Length: 270
Image 1 (tube, helix red, strand yellow):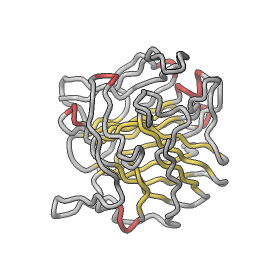
Image 2 (spheres, helix red, strand yellow):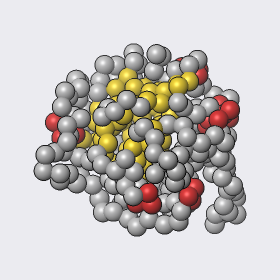
Image 3 (spheres, one colour):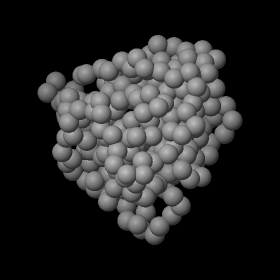
Image 4 (cartoon, rainbow, N blue to C red):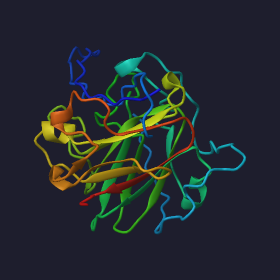
Protein backbone atom coordinates (compact mmCIF):
# COMPACT_ATOMS: atom_id res chain seq x y z
CA UNK A 1 0.00 0.00 0.00
CA UNK A 2 1.21 3.48 -0.81
CA UNK A 3 -0.09 6.93 -0.09
CA UNK A 4 0.40 9.12 -3.13
CA UNK A 5 0.22 12.89 -2.79
CA UNK A 6 -1.55 14.61 -5.64
CA UNK A 7 -2.13 18.31 -6.18
CA UNK A 8 -5.08 19.72 -8.05
CA UNK A 9 -7.44 22.66 -8.02
CA UNK A 10 -10.87 21.85 -6.66
CA UNK A 11 -13.91 23.67 -7.98
CA UNK A 12 -15.68 25.96 -5.58
CA UNK A 13 -19.00 25.06 -4.06
CA UNK A 14 -21.71 27.69 -3.67
CA UNK A 15 -22.34 28.74 -0.11
CA UNK A 16 -25.40 30.32 1.42
CA UNK A 17 -24.22 33.70 0.11
CA UNK A 18 -24.31 32.30 -3.46
CA UNK A 19 -20.69 33.43 -3.85
CA UNK A 20 -18.08 30.89 -4.88
CA UNK A 21 -14.48 31.02 -3.68
CA UNK A 22 -11.59 28.93 -4.99
CA UNK A 23 -11.13 25.78 -2.95
CA UNK A 24 -7.35 25.78 -3.18
CA UNK A 25 -5.02 22.82 -3.57
CA UNK A 26 -5.62 19.53 -1.85
CA UNK A 27 -2.43 17.51 -2.17
CA UNK A 28 -2.83 14.73 0.31
CA UNK A 29 -4.85 12.39 -1.90
CA UNK A 30 -4.31 8.75 -1.00
CA UNK A 31 -4.20 5.86 -3.45
CA UNK A 32 -3.40 2.19 -3.40
CA UNK A 33 -0.18 0.92 -4.90
CA UNK A 34 3.25 -0.54 -4.20
CA UNK A 35 4.93 0.29 -0.91
CA UNK A 36 7.44 3.11 -0.64
CA UNK A 37 9.79 4.48 1.93
CA UNK A 38 8.29 5.72 4.13
CA UNK A 39 -14.76 30.05 13.79
CA UNK A 40 -13.02 29.13 16.98
CA UNK A 41 -9.52 30.49 17.39
CA UNK A 42 -7.20 28.97 19.97
CA UNK A 43 -4.25 31.20 20.84
CA UNK A 44 -1.40 29.16 22.29
CA UNK A 45 0.30 30.32 25.45
CA UNK A 46 2.68 27.53 26.42
CA UNK A 47 6.19 27.60 25.02
CA UNK A 48 9.61 26.02 25.31
CA UNK A 49 12.86 27.90 24.91
CA UNK A 50 14.83 24.74 24.16
CA UNK A 51 14.04 21.54 22.34
CA UNK A 52 13.44 18.34 24.28
CA UNK A 53 15.86 15.51 23.55
CA UNK A 54 13.22 12.81 24.04
CA UNK A 55 10.19 14.27 22.25
CA UNK A 56 10.52 11.56 19.59
CA UNK A 57 10.21 8.69 22.09
CA UNK A 58 7.17 6.41 21.99
CA UNK A 59 5.31 5.31 25.16
CA UNK A 60 6.30 1.73 25.96
CA UNK A 61 2.70 1.05 27.02
CA UNK A 62 1.45 1.75 23.50
CA UNK A 63 -1.14 4.13 24.97
CA UNK A 64 -1.22 7.80 24.06
CA UNK A 65 -2.46 10.88 25.86
CA UNK A 66 -5.62 12.68 24.74
CA UNK A 67 -5.39 15.36 27.42
CA UNK A 68 -6.43 18.78 26.15
CA UNK A 69 -8.24 17.55 23.04
CA UNK A 70 -11.95 18.00 22.44
CA UNK A 71 -14.23 15.25 21.19
CA UNK A 72 -13.61 13.51 17.87
CA UNK A 73 -15.89 14.10 14.90
CA UNK A 74 -17.00 11.59 12.27
CA UNK A 75 -15.32 11.41 8.88
CA UNK A 76 -17.13 11.74 5.55
CA UNK A 77 -16.49 11.37 1.84
CA UNK A 78 -13.48 9.97 0.02
CA UNK A 79 -10.52 11.03 -2.10
CA UNK A 80 -10.03 14.76 -2.41
CA UNK A 81 -13.31 15.55 -0.66
CA UNK A 82 -12.56 13.39 2.38
CA UNK A 83 -13.31 15.14 5.66
CA UNK A 84 -11.41 13.90 8.67
CA UNK A 85 -11.65 14.72 12.36
CA UNK A 86 -12.01 18.48 12.92
CA UNK A 87 -12.58 18.31 16.68
CA UNK A 88 -15.63 19.26 18.70
CA UNK A 89 -15.52 22.15 19.28
CA UNK A 90 -13.95 22.82 15.90
CA UNK A 91 -10.16 23.05 16.06
CA UNK A 92 -9.82 21.20 19.37
CA UNK A 93 -8.08 18.36 17.50
CA UNK A 94 -4.92 20.52 17.28
CA UNK A 95 -3.31 21.73 20.53
CA UNK A 96 -0.01 23.05 21.78
CA UNK A 97 1.74 20.86 24.38
CA UNK A 98 4.89 21.29 26.43
CA UNK A 99 8.23 19.70 25.56
CA UNK A 100 7.86 17.33 28.50
CA UNK A 101 4.38 16.24 27.39
CA UNK A 102 5.08 15.87 23.66
CA UNK A 103 6.26 12.26 23.65
CA UNK A 104 3.05 11.08 25.34
CA UNK A 105 0.95 11.99 22.26
CA UNK A 106 0.67 9.90 19.11
CA UNK A 107 1.01 12.60 16.45
CA UNK A 108 3.40 15.44 17.22
CA UNK A 109 5.18 18.30 15.44
CA UNK A 110 8.23 20.05 16.81
CA UNK A 111 8.25 23.64 15.50
CA UNK A 112 11.54 25.54 15.39
CA UNK A 113 13.06 27.97 12.93
CA UNK A 114 15.93 29.89 11.44
CA UNK A 115 13.96 33.11 12.00
CA UNK A 116 15.57 36.10 13.70
CA UNK A 117 12.25 37.92 14.22
CA UNK A 118 8.86 36.78 15.54
CA UNK A 119 6.92 34.59 13.11
CA UNK A 120 3.24 33.67 13.26
CA UNK A 121 2.31 30.01 12.75
CA UNK A 122 -1.36 29.22 12.02
CA UNK A 123 -2.88 25.72 11.83
CA UNK A 124 -6.21 24.86 10.23
CA UNK A 125 -8.34 21.85 9.37
CA UNK A 126 -9.05 21.13 5.71
CA UNK A 127 -12.76 21.65 6.47
CA UNK A 128 -13.81 24.83 8.24
CA UNK A 129 -16.17 25.21 11.20
CA UNK A 130 -19.25 25.45 8.93
CA UNK A 131 -18.52 22.16 7.18
CA UNK A 132 -17.21 23.66 3.92
CA UNK A 133 -13.81 22.81 2.44
CA UNK A 134 -12.50 26.26 3.33
CA UNK A 135 -10.43 25.77 6.46
CA UNK A 136 -7.62 28.00 5.12
CA UNK A 137 -9.93 31.00 4.53
CA UNK A 138 -9.23 32.95 7.70
CA UNK A 139 -9.86 30.07 10.13
CA UNK A 140 -7.42 29.06 12.85
CA UNK A 141 -7.50 25.92 14.96
CA UNK A 142 -4.28 27.02 16.66
CA UNK A 143 -2.17 30.15 16.35
CA UNK A 144 1.22 30.65 17.97
CA UNK A 145 4.10 33.11 17.73
CA UNK A 146 7.58 31.63 17.36
CA UNK A 147 10.36 33.90 18.63
CA UNK A 148 13.95 33.56 17.46
CA UNK A 149 15.55 30.46 18.97
CA UNK A 150 12.26 29.15 20.34
CA UNK A 151 10.89 25.61 20.01
CA UNK A 152 7.21 24.69 20.32
CA UNK A 153 5.32 21.41 20.19
CA UNK A 154 1.91 20.71 18.65
CA UNK A 155 -0.14 17.52 19.06
CA UNK A 156 -2.89 16.27 16.74
CA UNK A 157 -5.79 13.89 17.18
CA UNK A 158 -6.03 10.80 15.03
CA UNK A 159 -7.63 11.31 11.58
CA UNK A 160 -6.82 15.04 11.50
CA UNK A 161 -6.03 16.50 8.08
CA UNK A 162 -5.24 20.08 7.21
CA UNK A 163 -2.38 22.49 6.92
CA UNK A 164 -0.43 25.32 8.48
CA UNK A 165 1.36 28.43 7.33
CA UNK A 166 4.15 30.54 8.80
CA UNK A 167 5.23 34.09 8.06
CA UNK A 168 7.08 36.96 9.68
CA UNK A 169 4.87 39.28 11.70
CA UNK A 170 1.50 38.86 13.37
CA UNK A 171 -0.65 37.47 10.54
CA UNK A 172 -0.43 35.27 7.47
CA UNK A 173 -0.59 36.89 4.02
CA UNK A 174 -3.82 36.27 2.12
CA UNK A 175 -4.82 36.25 -1.53
CA UNK A 176 -7.61 38.35 -3.06
CA UNK A 177 -10.19 35.80 -1.89
CA UNK A 178 -8.97 35.76 1.72
CA UNK A 179 -7.17 32.41 1.54
CA UNK A 180 -3.84 31.96 3.26
CA UNK A 181 -1.17 32.63 0.64
CA UNK A 182 2.04 31.70 2.42
CA UNK A 183 4.08 28.53 2.06
CA UNK A 184 2.03 25.67 3.46
CA UNK A 185 2.83 22.56 5.43
CA UNK A 186 0.16 19.89 4.87
CA UNK A 187 -0.64 16.86 7.00
CA UNK A 188 -2.84 13.82 7.46
CA UNK A 189 -2.46 11.89 10.71
CA UNK A 190 -3.76 8.35 11.14
CA UNK A 191 -6.21 8.56 8.25
CA UNK A 192 -9.28 6.38 8.83
CA UNK A 193 -9.76 6.15 5.07
CA UNK A 194 -6.30 4.67 4.59
CA UNK A 195 -5.80 2.17 7.38
CA UNK A 196 -4.17 4.65 9.73
CA UNK A 197 -1.39 5.85 7.42
CA UNK A 198 -0.10 9.43 7.69
CA UNK A 199 1.44 11.90 5.26
CA UNK A 200 2.97 15.36 4.94
CA UNK A 201 4.39 17.81 2.40
CA UNK A 202 5.54 21.41 1.95
CA UNK A 203 3.86 23.48 -0.76
CA UNK A 204 4.46 26.91 -2.30
CA UNK A 205 1.48 26.68 -4.67
CA UNK A 206 -0.82 29.07 -2.83
CA UNK A 207 1.92 31.70 -2.45
CA UNK A 208 3.10 31.41 -6.05
CA UNK A 209 -0.40 31.47 -7.52
CA UNK A 210 -1.03 34.70 -5.62
CA UNK A 211 2.36 36.14 -6.73
CA UNK A 212 3.39 36.47 -3.10
CA UNK A 213 6.54 35.68 -1.11
CA UNK A 214 7.51 32.02 -0.77
CA UNK A 215 8.66 31.47 2.79
CA UNK A 216 11.19 28.74 3.51
CA UNK A 217 9.90 25.62 5.28
CA UNK A 218 11.21 22.12 5.94
CA UNK A 219 9.35 19.13 7.37
CA UNK A 220 11.16 15.90 8.23
CA UNK A 221 10.04 12.55 9.59
CA UNK A 222 12.05 12.51 12.83
CA UNK A 223 11.64 8.73 13.10
CA UNK A 224 12.89 8.12 9.56
CA UNK A 225 14.73 9.91 6.79
CA UNK A 226 12.07 11.51 4.58
CA UNK A 227 11.95 15.30 4.28
CA UNK A 228 10.02 17.85 2.22
CA UNK A 229 11.47 21.34 1.92
CA UNK A 230 11.47 24.66 0.11
CA UNK A 231 13.99 27.41 0.77
CA UNK A 232 13.13 31.12 0.76
CA UNK A 233 11.72 32.29 -2.58
CA UNK A 234 11.77 28.65 -3.76
CA UNK A 235 15.51 28.81 -4.40
CA UNK A 236 15.79 25.09 -3.70
CA UNK A 237 12.86 22.67 -3.77
CA UNK A 238 13.26 19.11 -2.46
CA UNK A 239 10.36 16.65 -2.50
CA UNK A 240 7.89 19.53 -2.26
CA UNK A 241 5.25 21.30 -4.32
CA UNK A 242 5.52 24.41 -6.46
CA UNK A 243 2.96 25.60 -9.02
CA UNK A 244 4.74 23.51 -11.65
CA UNK A 245 3.87 20.32 -9.72
CA UNK A 246 0.20 21.11 -9.18
CA UNK A 247 -0.90 17.94 -10.97
CA UNK A 248 1.98 15.67 -9.89
CA UNK A 249 1.52 12.82 -7.42
CA UNK A 250 3.94 11.10 -5.09
CA UNK A 251 5.49 14.19 -3.51
CA UNK A 252 6.10 14.46 0.22
CA UNK A 253 6.27 11.86 2.98
CA UNK A 254 4.00 8.83 3.42
CA UNK A 255 4.19 7.01 6.75
CA UNK A 256 2.83 3.63 7.82
CA UNK A 257 0.32 3.39 10.65
CA UNK A 258 1.71 4.34 14.04
CA UNK A 259 3.12 7.26 15.98
CA UNK A 260 4.40 10.21 13.94
CA UNK A 261 7.07 12.75 14.92
CA UNK A 262 7.56 15.61 12.44
CA UNK A 263 10.35 18.16 12.84
CA UNK A 264 9.38 21.48 11.23
CA UNK A 265 11.80 24.32 10.44
CA UNK A 266 10.27 27.65 9.46
CA UNK A 267 12.11 30.44 7.59
CA UNK A 268 14.23 27.62 6.18
CA UNK A 269 17.13 28.76 4.02
CA UNK A 270 19.07 25.49 3.70
